[in-house]
Length: 132
Image 1 (cartoon, helix red, strand yellow):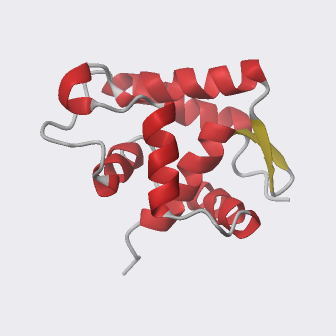
Image 2 (cartoon, rainbow, N blue to C red):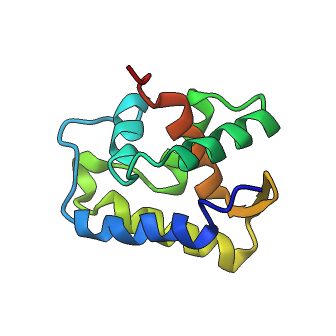
């Protein structure tokens, strides 16, 4: 088991995002999955382990794809950047905290992640630009 990324580290990524508390994407619509993926990617330090966790979730959940993950995260994060004025970072942190409080967790490669964390890492893995 790779211990490079723990639940605490993932939550740390979410907490770090509080520095982006004024981050919004003007002109984005709910049906633009690339926009949400790009916004969420800004909250990750490009950790290869973060991507590995996402790939593990995808291996264990082969029916998930960019569209399903985006739809799920859009709903969970109440993502409406064009009108909400609220940042994505605090919404993500609140969703993760709520998942754990309410017992909405998933086993992913010997870890227990919140549903939001698991899908966030999976979307990241699917939409990460190829290295090179």
